[in-house]
Length: 204
Length: 204
Image 1: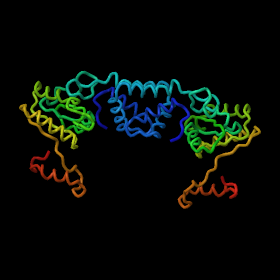
Image 2: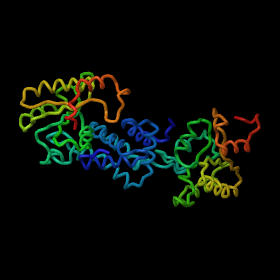
Image 3: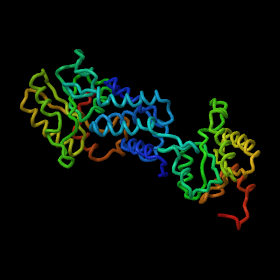
Image 4: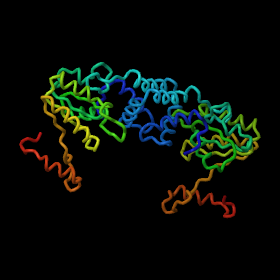
């Protein structure tokens, strides 16, 4: 890393280097680029980022990001109010919305139970999920959490809590990705896709 | 690219995507990361970037970035005041400083002559360079501009202007990089390194 002849430039480089996947060299490139932009562009840039903290809200129902009290999904009367898909974060909501295959609602947990990282039940949006299944006409909760030890723990806990309500708890199908070769699939996924096989006439 | 459920988030993503080499996916990752940081961290982040515009100065002598009127190089009496190395931008200054091989001063042109990009002689720090060689005890000017058509044009123009003063104009050595194989070198570089060969006893 080259020596930086200014503490102010160095601070800006350090700031950029806090972004995920950004090293010192890339951070320097970003800082030098920003420095050379006209004042108005830099003001626009900084305002856009600053509004992330001041003006960006969470939907009061599903905890997804939203500019309004209720997010576009929650406030859309055409969405199926009887299904809630539970996901870890808003990236997952965006990924599912992108498929255009899902017409129900969401619930963003904001993480998964992870004792090692100090994330307990109280740190996640679990209480509000249990409240929703009591107050809303929910007939199905889809668990779409990651297949990690933490995700499985969270799935297990949520399933136990949700079982006391008159609704179905499901989980998204795991299996060989469409287009993938069986010979290159990992054995856990391949084994599970055999155990969870579906009648041929049922495939969507 | 996934659909973003918030205009404010989308604006932040667009802002990040203006940085060099940052696409929409990376910009989204940056924005979601920033959004999830504590208020104090985001304030520190934004202040560090905003100071790039408000507090960062250019050295009044060599035009490198500086927190003070004169940059650390220009204000160091131990540096050889008789040699000026002319470079395109401050990244070049940092790269040369990093070699610890150069003890003279710098002059940052701020670009090279490029009629296609609308960069003329008046847009570069050329007048101040000519002023320096008249006012300071300069005995050598090293041209270290890029070996592009624009760099060569600028070299040619600067050499013509500098020739009228009692000083030597030199340019950095171009040749096969140390450790590189001759068989993989491009023919222009290899040809030039033969033409500009140096007596064996002279090598540094």
